[in-house]
Length: 357
Image 1 (tube, rainbow, N blue to C red):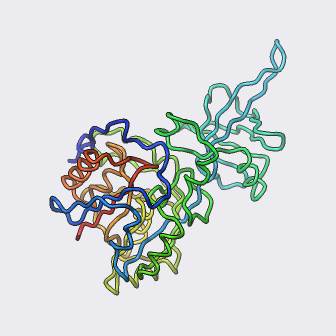
Image 2 (cartoon, rainbow, N blue to C red):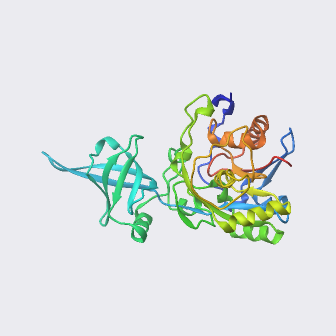
Image 3 (cartoon, helix red, strand yellow):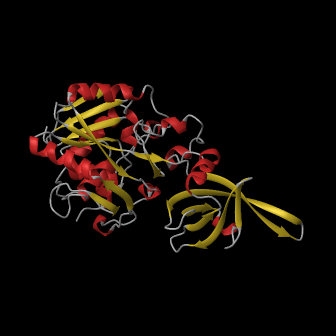
């Protein structure tokens, strides 16, 4: 039995990055080749074209982060007159009906079902019901393009808790916390390995003969939920919506058939393509919600490597990279990263993990 404590490590707080390096490819890149000890190289993301081969394929998550954090006010009549309370809202996922969202409200206790939260003159939401999981169902007065425009005006980027606890989101985060190939809106957290790419690096990779495919996984706030059970086999993953298009599946299958390496950029892209290969054993078009939990013992059917940032101790993402490289190898990689002062988490540095060298 693998225990949660197997994935713990001591991380100096000063290594937690609260802002990215610029330009994006200037971030450091720790390259780990093979599952055996040694073979670690300290490079930069800009070196990626020299590390990949013609015919390799990067799989990029083209989800677009929405400014999902809102601050509004609840108004209520009282004996003293009309009083208000500040309400902070973090959108989690859209509900089936237009204009309805599942969200986290803070403080939830200050709201009654049927009350309205006002975010601006023409932007408000009705608090419909509490969920058993501590979430709330909101019905906005706008939907579609009107909702998107209002959210852009009123919302802030949903920085991860370990950054938000150190500083508020600012205007710069609207660019920094978004990949340059983001297309499909719906994420409330960024696929952070994607943040290291700029247009110039993508062009250099293409010139080298590295192919690229786009898939979509809308990253949810559940990505930050802690694992609360010591026996990790009892942990239940959150679900996230994703799609591997027929074109992407065909491109990835062609690369595998030709002997090229398929390297997802980020754990989100990896989880999605492995989900799409569960039924047949090979990549196939897929669309729906995935709650795949990748931990040691997992049988990888598509991914030949992974580019990813450095993850939180005792997180499901530490379990994922341990499944790919082996637990002892990941301990070695992370000890090296801490010793060499790599920057951790969403705005931090990256690693390139190649289990077969």
